[in-house]
Image 1 (cartoon, rainbow, N blue to C red):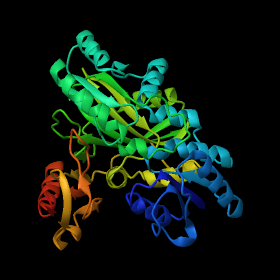
Image 2: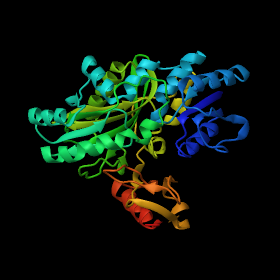
Image 3: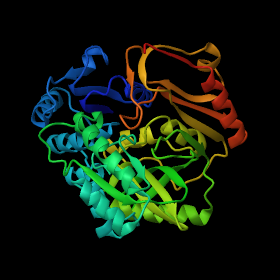
Length: 414
């Protein structure tokens, strides 16, 4: 099994641990970055194009494929799902197709697809100007959610509770999305749809993160994770628990809305990361991405539900149906959190051995390092990393995760 992993613009070393998992699961993995850093992956299986224009990326991929054929192309980056679809099409390899990838990347196009396909979703409106957003508030009332069409990781996503807050947050979001990494890392030369802001009606219930698989006439929910954060006016994905607290009837309702949404987006064969929130007892789609969820959600899925999103991506990339069935929890309790600090430039991060070597951790990853600048809302949404622990209950696992996270020390230069 020879696979090609692609990033139009390299997201530092964020995906290296996932590339290593791909190899542990039996693949010969090559990595192609449009723009990237030397020495990121073994030299004989790593190439940098020197450009993030899609024509240059396709040309480099095609030349490599002619020398040593690939069985499939994949990415773990939200900012490269469209590029991967274009490259796979050019190489004649399995792909969801560019249109489905674009619809699954751009939140406005996604919402339009959900509306057309009958998938439950919040009210939405594209808002090129502040006046458009204020008009939506007048018509729908508050709170509203303001978000980028081409965002990720909750960057510049705000809960808006009043016209005054909209007047404050809207220009912050407009300025922020201009050089937001999740937009600038996209391949050049692709029509990604409108780059701007939308407002959505607020959904007031519980939120759930799902790792799923679309395969022809069925969608399988491999893993369901509860988001248990008490949120404010920003949306940090910072505390999760599995197995889910959903009842069997609620799981069935979530399955229906995810399946309807995936088909509405034109996705027939893909690993999926779906986010669903309940409102007045009914599940609504926040989004369905055509890649696995970030952080430690892939580890959480394996531990709590026996489902491997990474292996699913590998098999889908080469056109082979992954081993998956409908959601079946293992009974192991897990709690995971984002490691969040104040804003500033990092001088040093100290991780005691009692943390890194803890047998109760199922996942631990520090993604920031000395010299990195941490931005917090409203200027960005950077974190230090992720930590997840197991336990006999959610309370037990959460207590362990919290105690271990508290031992990590971060020093700043300012």
